[in-house]
Length: 91
Image (tube, rainbow, N blue to C red; front, side, top):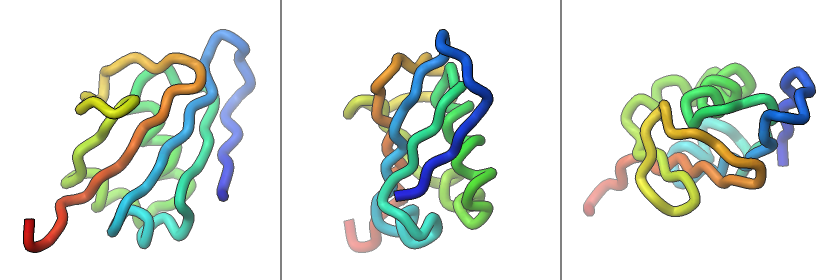
């Protein structure tokens, strides 16, 4: 599992970003943990900085926040889970 350490700020949550299918292949890991992010978009930017090959994948992916479809401006809470679900073939 990879981990990205953003600037420490106890008011900003640590969240998990999980990858599925092509996103997992692009990242090379199942998930990352990122800190210092206040929105889903911040978390996505942090993991793209870690894994530049994710940049194209996230533009076509559905993002989930704790199991629900999220937008980039969706706020994060400590312990939240963001999932990156690229489109699946044959679905």
